[in-house]
Image 1 (cartoon, rainbow, N blue to C red):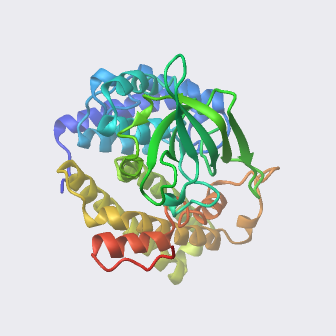
Image 2: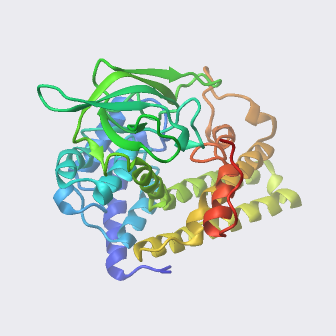
Amino acid sequence: MKLGFTAKEERFRAEAAGWLQGQLSGPFRDLRGLLMQGGHAQRRRDWERALGAAGWSCIGWPEAYGGRGATLAEQVIFAEEYARAGAPGRLGYMGVELLGPTLLAFGTEAQRRRFLPPIARGEELWCQGYSEPNAGSDLASVRTRAVLEERAAGPEWVVNGQKTWTSFAQFADWAFVLCRTEEGSRGHRGLSYLLISMHQPGVTVRPIRQMTGGADFNDTFLVDARTAAENVVGATGDGWKVAMGTLSFERGVSTLAQQMSFANELRTIVSMAEANGLIHDPQIRQRLAHAHIGLRLMRYSALRMLSSAEAGKLSNEAYTYKIFWASWRKKLGVLALDVLGPQGEIAAGASYEWELLPRLFLGSRADTIYGGTSQIQRNIIAERALGLPRESRSS
């Protein structure tokens, strides 16, 4: 596991930090600190295009598809500097971090040439069509179906079903969708991974209104939605393998940027404790120390996980990382409100305009649910990492 950086890599860091600071202190200063979800859609699109034009959007991709061919160390550096600069959450995240690597690993050359450059330029945005009303953590229960039909212009998939909790669907131009293409199939078998345009009559996006008043997620309805036969990634019926490949990329370099955001949250909690005197409370100090230790452990685990992945291996950290950070951040959210006291119960403005620490508490409640519940994560650790017998499952 590599913990340090060379002089060349530090020069790369300076270049990245300089560009980010220049943009976020200049033309994009209004986007500094903007979270993953939220408004400012057009400005966020402008930011994606600015990243693409400067070659900072997908630096780990090959140059032929719009990347820089950056090394793993350079990708880690950029992720850290991106978070350190307070750069906005990426509206292009699904395409850059999930769909792009999936096409590089499983797609055809024609698919890479068609879809990767527009993602790198910030011109096409993507969303993920996995979860359904009755298929969340149990992803193998998806019911969305696709049937291949012959047409004069060529064969097309006709897709019907509903996807839910679809982040960025309201902005997306395309979706990668896991659906059932084999009649009568169950579980992992008979699934395919399709690329579907969101700009067609058969696609309806309906925001899911949250109790805070926002609508960061969506229901997506597919009614006779169509896509060309060649827009299947991997072999027909091999969608589970491709979908799991996509999920594995969520444990990639972006985890380091995520940790930098966590560090910003922890620093804000410390500053608040210093301001209101709770920094002298022994219990608060102990909890702050535990949070700091957990964050450092997270960093070392992520670096070990990335080093193993670069060597073509799957480390135990890859199995445990999600449940670790989600449980850690949930405790951090409670600590944030304990430090804030009654102030944390008062919104900064109308329509639930919460400041950073109340937002941390509210958002962290879902950390142990999305991306695989903690219960499912424990099963994965037991069965895949430890080799224990599979849990009994009802038919």
